[in-house]
Length: 402
Length: 139
Image (tube, rainbow over all chains, first blue to last red; front, side, top):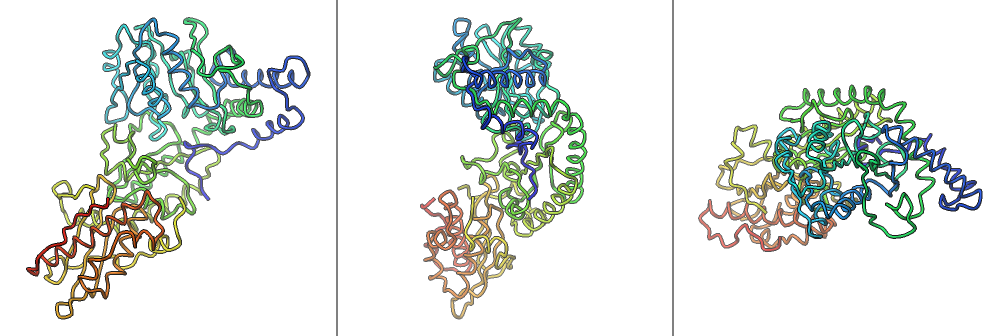
């Protein structure tokens, strides 16, 4: 089985799992137990992991708030800022291609009486900086723009957004789930004040994530979204997931050492995959601006072929994702691609390849062969491919919408 | 999601893929669905004028595995049936045969629509009253 769905989750690195195991058995303590050695060992391990994670993103360990994952960190940042800064204003700016964790948290903010502006993206998937500038009002408390998109790998212009937020005096939050541990991410340099990320996208365990919260210039605070023991400087109550945090820390340490070489290797493999598929198959399009992309991601639409059907030709052997409606719970095609103006038909026809640390060149060679074969097979079955080949203008056909 | 053996068999070995001459008087063609919706089915029948029986059926489908399997199954069922018998094929029979999960029931509805649409086309060409519209209320 070849795994090319690393944007969904990455397999844990065995070195990560090895560091976690003692914290289930020999060291089972609660990091909040202050009066016996089990607690001290756990607390020390958490502090060490906090340092490893802080080092990866060049921040102070005190600025790391542990959560259950990036979804919780996104929620904490958005709702927490909205509540904490309610006297300053009630307006948040985000964009239409954000992850659901951000979009749905913003919807909740609207229900709580806030106002949210959803910026459109341009055809290349990036936001328009002038639109962002124009959207900021004296009521704006937060701009939330993702670092890299989960479906396309597109990297938003973080530095420029940070500068605009600095100039206008609003907080800048970023969902950096897909970027941290894959490329060098430096929130302080970019003017990011809050940043959500997670362990299981960087070869660590699932169920643990973090929110970076800037402590100085400006000192940022968020209102806790869960009431309890006041852990994590009062911002996130709940017993810390010690083995998970230890694994997250180890994953961060490994990423720091290896992400550069991983990225170089994977971008070569990604380019090989993309270029060979585009050479083998006519009528394919890469979605998103290739100059602003994560090194390990490729999103391609194969015209006149439906994505789920295409995946079924090889899904016993290759795992990946599609923007097809048939693979989503909502039965709508990828809203990210649709927001980019890709069109529903091409969104249905898209596949997302996301490579990872354990992807080998022979995996890519196999995937190229299987996808080429699959697309050709599905096109032989496709009436619209036949019509296209006969020169029928598909936009002139009166389709029966259903 | 895990699909039934029958569905996977129809997907991997689709029956009756192809194209009949849509200009022929003995051929009825149904084209249903829309590319923006992620499914387009084209189903064709060839009718023997003397016996009124469907002698051949072909399909091509742009869609997910369930849509392809539903149309493949439909062509198998159509062959040998009279036009009237074919009209009585109900989408729920396809759902049962392929064990379609609830989110895929629309694929079977589309296949039923395609059958009705192909028959309507055949009848129109042959001057018969078209009482069976291609639309279905079941979606």
